[in-house]
Amino acid sequence: MAIFSSTFRSKCLDRDVEFQVIIPNDDLSFYNNGVREYRKPKKTLYLLHGYSDCSSAWLIKGLALEVANQYHIAIVMPTGENSFYLDQEKTGGKYGSFIGKELVEYTRETFGLSCRKEDTLIGGLSMGGFGAIHVGLTNKDTFGGIIALSAALVISRIKGMKQGQEDGLANYEYYHSIFGDLENVDKTTKNPEVLICQLLEEQHSVPPIYMACGTEDVLIDVNRQFYQFLCDKKIEKVKYLEEAGIHDWTFWNRNLSPAVQWVLEQMER
Image 1 (spheres, one colour):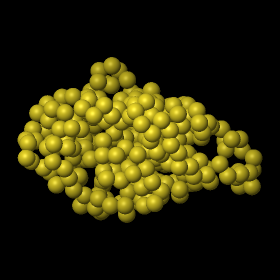
Image 2 (cartoon, rainbow, N blue to C red):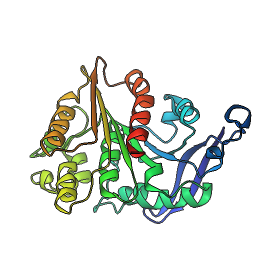
Image 3 (spheres, helix red, strand yellow):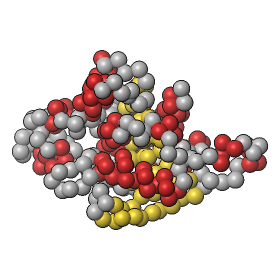
Image 4 (cartoon, rainbow, N blue to C red):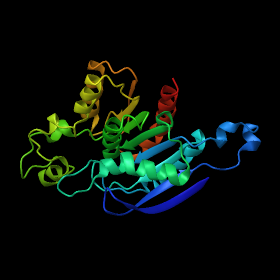
């Protein structure tokens, strides 16, 4: 198992950026009897952190190492700051393009990762869950599966928010800087529901989506809402799990491995 802390110059963000990479490259010949599967370019999970965290969150607080070893899959963990992993007109920070294109291309070339859509997943928790859905749907030819744990699907909550208001997480000024016009935010491509509708209109398939949220989580209502939207649109490859839990690492760690397993199975069909 190799763990890298890497830095490179991002054109999308116009600065040096840091990310973490786990490569399960141990010699497993004793266990796999020389099966060549272990010598193929690695399947990869791009794993996104939540609001106020950083690229090392899944290493320090989460089970990224265990999951990488369990599924023999590379895991790339970037820093997305508090960007919701969206391209932002005001700041010029193209976080969505950075995650969905630039970082994927760079890590594939640098670490010899698989270039196949069927070998490439994206996932995350909370803000990172939103980012995984949005980036995964925006880059339909890159990601073959999406994992969203306690996803911060806040569009319906912040629509129409006025100056001086806040929702317990952030205030109007923050959301306006990230999402733009909050009066019409639900009609823009920053809304995952709009992206789903676009894919269906263009007759593109929607990648498998695994969602999980705790019944005591503050985001349970918006997760139920998005899942119901997917059901109404008759999206076939969707798994939604609710179980006792709050918005914490206990819940996310418990659900990461089952999520990876389900998405990998769906991608192979």
